[in-house]
Amino acid sequence: MHLVYILVIAVSMLTILSALALVFGSSKSERKHSLWFFVAAIGEVLWGVSIAICLSLGTSELDYAVAPWLIKGIYVGAILMDSTILGYVAWKYKYGKILTSVFLIVGAILSTIFLYDPSVLYKEIILSNSGNSIVINTDHWFYSAYIVYFCTIVPAFCLALVYKIKHATKKDTKRGYLFFLIGLAVAGFFSLIFDLIMPMNRYDLIWIGPLLIGLTMLGFYYAVLRYRMISLATSWLKIMSSVVIIGGAIIVYLLVFHLIFSALFKVANPSFQVILLNFIMIAIVLLLTPAISEIFAITRSLIMTKQIDIAYIVKKLTKLNQSRVNLKDISGFLAEHTHFSYVGFLVNGKYYVADDYRLPADKLVALPNLKKPEHGIWQNISELDRETVRECGISKVAVVTNANGDVIGQVVLGKPMSKSLLDRKDLTEMEMIISLMGTMIENGGRKS
Image (cartoon, rainbow, N blue to C red; front, top):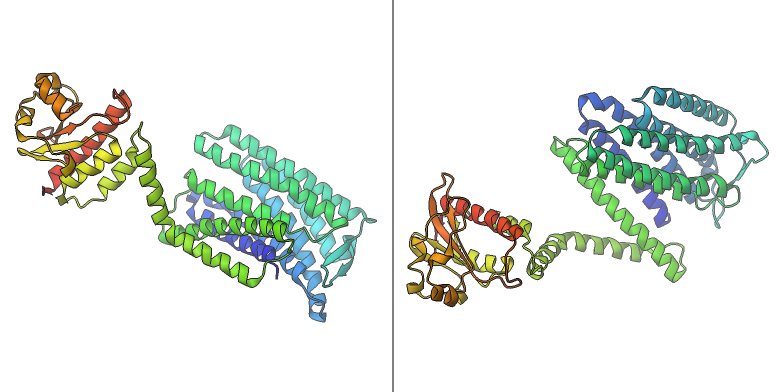
C-alpha cells in the first residue's frame, strides 16, 4: 500500500478519536450537539478508508468481489459526512434545522438509489497494476445530481459557519469556527475538483479530498483545545487529545515529505527503508524536543538584550528548590537574563552576588539605611554617596518584602547592559521578579 493511502487511513482514525474526545469533553448541554461531529467523522472514515483500500486492491477474484462495496462506501460516506457537518454547524438555528433536514433527506434518497442500483453512477470497475478506477456513467442523470448536491451543501455549511461566527459571543469561539470555515472552504474546493470532476477522466487522485477534509477536522479539534471550547476533565481524554495532536503533526510531516520526495526523485512511493528512516527521525526529534526547546528559550532570553524574557525567568525560578535557595547562583542567573552588569541580594546583613561582581564591604554599609519607599519597592539612591554609586555601578535599589509587607532584604541592580535608562515596562518586569524572590527568600533558607 502506498504511503499516501496509509496517511489517509491514519487521518481517518485520528478523526474518529478527535470526535470521541469532543463528544465526551463537551458539557452535558453540548454533548448531543457534538454527536453531529462524531457522525461526520464516521462518514469521513467510511469515505477515506474506502478510497485508500479501493486504490490499493489487486486483481484477484476477492478484490473484484470487495471493490463494489468499497465504491458504495466512498460515495455514501461522503454524503453522510457533509450532511452531518452541516448539522453540526447549523442545527441550533431555525433555518439551519430546515436546511439540514432537506440535505439529509436528499442525501438519503441519493444513497438509496445508488445502493439499490450502482449502475446509475458507474459502468465498470477497473482493477489493474497501473491503477484502479471506475468508469463514471455520465449518460445517467444521477452523477450530475450527485455533483450538484455537493456544490450546494459546501456553500451551505460555509454560510452557516459565517452566521455562527457572526453571532458567537466569545472571541476565542469565533477564532475556532473561523479556522473551521477556512479549512472546509479550501478542502471543499479541492474535493470538488479531485473527487467529483477529475474522476470522470482520472481516478487516482481522489485520496486528496478525504485527506484534506480529515486534516481540517483534526485542525478544528486543535482549535477547540487551543481556544478552550471544551474542557478535558479526565486523564484519558487528555491522553487521547495528545495522540490526536501529535499524530496529526506526524501525518502532516510525512505528507510534506512524500510530496517533496516524489517531486525530487520522480518516485511514486518511497521505499520501506526510507519510510522507516523517517519514523526513526521523528522519534529522535520528539525525544530531543524538550532539550531543543530549552536551548531556544535560553538563547532567546540571552540575545533579547533590549527586553527581559520574563516568562523564561519566572519559569526557571519557580522550578528551583524553594527550601534551599542559593542566592549567589540566582544572582548570576538574573544578571545574565535581565541584562544588568550584576544583581545582588542584601539579606540579614549579608550580601549575595556572583563571584565576578563582589563589592567592597565598606561600600555596602549605607544600603540598609536607605528609607523604605512610601509607594512601590524602589528606594531613592540619591541618599547614597555619589562615589559609592559610581564605583559600585548602582542603577537601582529595591526592597524585598514578605507576604505581610515587611522588609526582609534588598536587591541591588548594576548598570543596564543594553540601554542607558530603564522604561516603565522594564521596572514593572523587575518588580515581578523581585516580588517572586521575596516569596522564595521567605519560604526557604539561604546559603552562600
